[in-house]
Image (tube, rainbow, N blue to C red; front, side, top):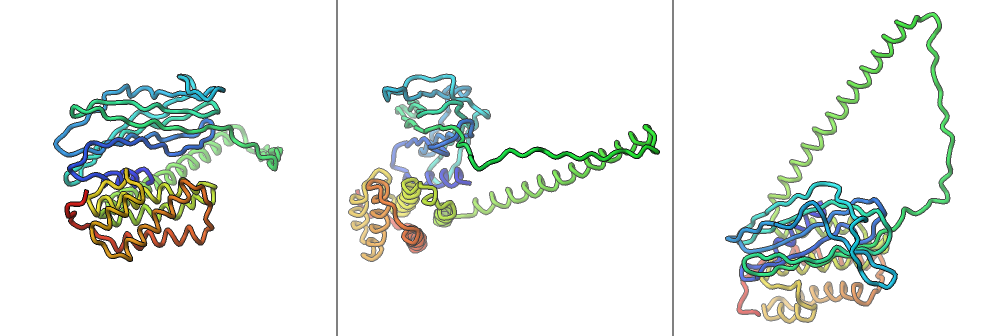
Length: 321
């Protein structure tokens, strides 16, 4: 679901007049050795063009930081878990190509998946690098090893060997059929729920998708895991993406100060600009000044973000550069 929301929001970032944009996303930046990592490449471009990913899909380049702080090539630590898959989503005048690798790393340290360049529509498109750290699973001192106490039922002596084997086969058949029925039930329920979610997401407009993404971010409560910077980076990304779509401006590449200047040229209500400014500066304080707000402050900013998205609709741009 997180990947779907990220793709949906990245889709709305660029109006027709913008050039192609590429993005690299890792599902986690801090992982345990052997843990699955989703590596996603996104390319947003105008309709009328066709993009084909011609790079080698059977391997992912990887570099590891050595003792001198320099990244060197490392071909043995990273492993691809599942075959590469890609999709293409079309909406109005834009197309979003998504390529996904599922990988894991078998060593500790700091790793980098290098950036790479592809030629598309007579332009060099750069997919940025992605850096993550891997560590061993922490030892739990409080965990005690317990002996396994096994009990076995003895077959009554009066039952002969043939009768015992027949009864055992009956029990095994009953257990197997019960397991098949339970498994089929959960598979069918999962398929029904998945189809219902897909239909629901497809019927959402960009505003509803953004609100759903903010609610998902709220449920994760990353600040409780010490990930305040990641929380506010994602919140800032969601807000700038939505405002970019509503006002037909490329706000992802703008500072908060530049963003506010552009919004003022649109002659929005001063109270709305003030609220947007407060949200973006609040996120910047955590991302760049490394402040750690209390939970009440985090929840207040999330509620404010949902309110400003609910009260903001797309407008026509009037010569704003």
